Length: 382
Image (cartoon, rainbow, N blue to C red; front, top):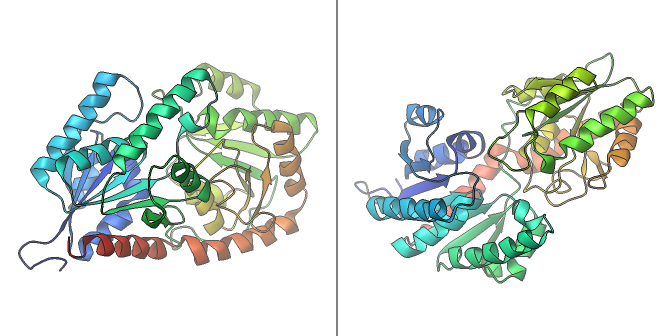
């Protein structure tokens, strides 16, 4: 057991919503518990809390909204986290997603938590937008990062070098506090490498239906391919996110459904099955941490078409497991999709290389062990 027989060391995961904890951090939390840590989870309220508790993990509800910028609500989030940390007294907090990293980092500093792990899985839209208001918010957020990362025992996990270099450039942390881990991992047993289906090729995009995910470029590329007479099924899997300012509106989905240029099955949890039924996986996002969907595509042995932006380009080996296209270019996206649609042998070669990449870099066992090593390092003599 980690710690003494009577007092195991306590780890608290802080994540914005319970669904994200289950989809992206659950294997790490369970492995930490198996290693002898006392594991707690703090998220906002949600239906998935029941599943967290069913798995035997202690859950704490905190007032943290995934979106929104109301100053009083944001202050309330920091206060809620501070009170929990003072009461629970964890030896280490693992902060995941932007608001928990910022507000949890500040609360941990104020509460005197001895060790902090911050997982930066993308820097968010504030580092993409170029408006005057966005630049002002960027200055504010940069200051919050510097405050949140002002811990002696700190490890900041990055999924791509662009996010790392961006936060190093603003002086948010020191080089020795950086850790690089390739995403959230994938259970290779659950994402089997199967041969492509026959018939008309299927291109799948699975993501939250946000502008920043490249949804509009995907639909426009589908329109271009139809105009060219290319035989293809373009399948857009996912649901709108009403709390996000860049969410696709339902009226737009209704319009696309009426046009019939893309299939819209809505949110699906059976992504392995969806990828098995596809020939190509596409994600024309504007910026990512390291997208789990592309890691899963590699595990399933599917060729990928994605954008040449931070995170996306780090999830593939260009021209080996997939191809890169310029961001916000529906025409270039349609061109590369058409080229792969018409080249089944190249798709199969890329799919095989993708599976090999997943086995080498993305397996969940590898990712879990890297996290446990970080916990051990920070908690030694703490």
